[in-house]
Image (cartoon, rainbow, N blue to C red):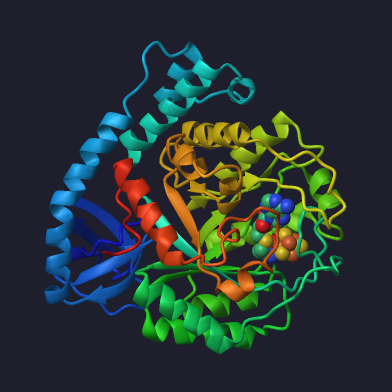
Length: 431
Ligand code: SAH
Ligand code: SF4
């Protein structure tokens, strides 16, 4: 669940661990971790966790504003997400859902669709399922990239340690806290990802201190995206209040994984991801699409592996070759490939949260919209301070770098406009 509209707690489970929250007549459950809340309180919940409490005086005007708007948006979504006519038997089966799931061959058939009309039916069917199963809520998370130092050497990545041509940076604790204050107080974000290369300069204690200081001030969901750290480190981060982790397994093909991530093993990565999930973390995970050597079967397996992890969010994106990496000459992935994977993921895991990743947006200005109309229901906005953004160079063509006067507010306004035009409630931004 990802409403950042405040809801009212109407009951709390006997063990005190789960709150039932009401939003405009809809009931949702959220875990209570560390927050002191009681029945009748107005709270914000993110990713299924109660992250903050607000007073009734603050909550009521927000709810009043949302009530009419919410219904208007639902109507727009309803019209845009109708099921297309005369869909193929493959799409009919996909639409029907879990009772008779698509076989691996059928999943591959979906990825092989090329005809323009059929592709449109594919995206529309996925969008219809999204609406039917999850309605019009769309999470909008922010990401702050706080260091581009990395001790790993992933062949696909522009900030790999062997790339000596980039300017490295590390944000200080104070700079990170300032960026978070700005994102929460000025821009209204309720969920933030703190991302970096694998950078041991930040000790466990430093990361914990940053998370603690954020949580002392802000009722938000924090996702760490810092690669492979020890389980002890993750436990301490959870204790400090970072309940989310964004960590992709990159590819389900263990040979490809070993080739692309020198010295690393897929099994270790998966073991960590599964451990995080079973220890209560909100987990966002996924893979790269279009890696050199990756087959359609691999992508089918990638989707199924993601599903088997039972992630709280799917995060997959196109591989985009970077000039200063060994994969500089590899072909870039195409937008249709990614849209097909969004639709396919929606078919096989109908109630999942699927993110339109920032890498997809490098393809075109319309990619966000295309992703949302192909079955996705989450967005990420880059909030890295301007002076560092250009140096967080995972792949070329990142959005928001082309103008000297990039302002997150502008991107947020555009995103809100887009969501409104599609009838989605941008519920992570507050109002
Ligand atoms: N170091 C952490 C987090 C930062 S990297 C980690 O690796 O988990 C975040 C993501 O960037 C990676 O998971 C990878 O999927 C993506 N990425 C790296 N290089 C890329 C490229 N060339 N094209 C697209 N995505 C890329
Ligand atoms: Fe480092 Fe992550 Fe890039 Fe790999 S993908 S080189 S771990 S930042």
